[in-house]
Image 1: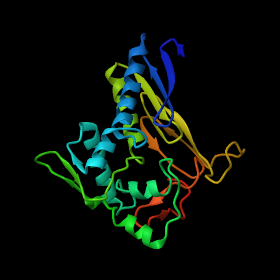
Image 2: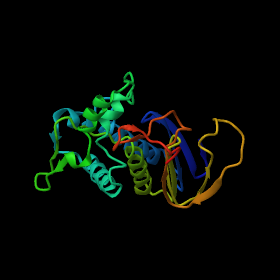
Image 3: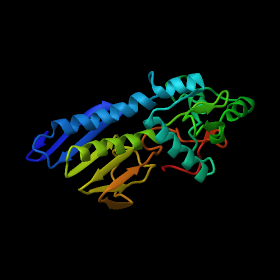
Length: 239
């Protein structure tokens, strides 16, 4: 929809509804197209639901990543180290075994879980600074499900800025939102509240520029996995 110098568009991408708003352009169409192209590029690079560069890297065990893939991998490994492995991009074998990619969820025995954990650990990823190649130890596979949407939002915002927009908002479902040149109010609600259940938010905060990402059991069932134990995270309803 368009109203004066504000335009909005929504598309289905990355398994969710992506919404882009752009301000300050008399012809916003190219900017919206560029923003969605950036999101599609990230999806085509990092999806584990369809053939992608990340799938090919996982299958081969090594390769020279594109700039997008390398940027996300570098950031993911940095966060993994800083969090002591609470976040770990090598969690893919566990996610797959627990049905995270549409495969039947397995009821893992302690020995099966231990075998999967032996394949997980961010230190099992080797980056060659000279050749630029990535090498994964045998059995290790990458999953950027906890970071790719945020990167896609960043890239879409950059596309809007490059197009000359004075303000922009990019939202990927209920998990990631980013903006510049404007502000939005975000509500923090009880994650145990049923969808649509009335009740006042715990808090409301205003974001002027930047990005916010979240995931919780209120958005969908248990899916937050502790890579260190191989179990679903406990004592955490939303992050």
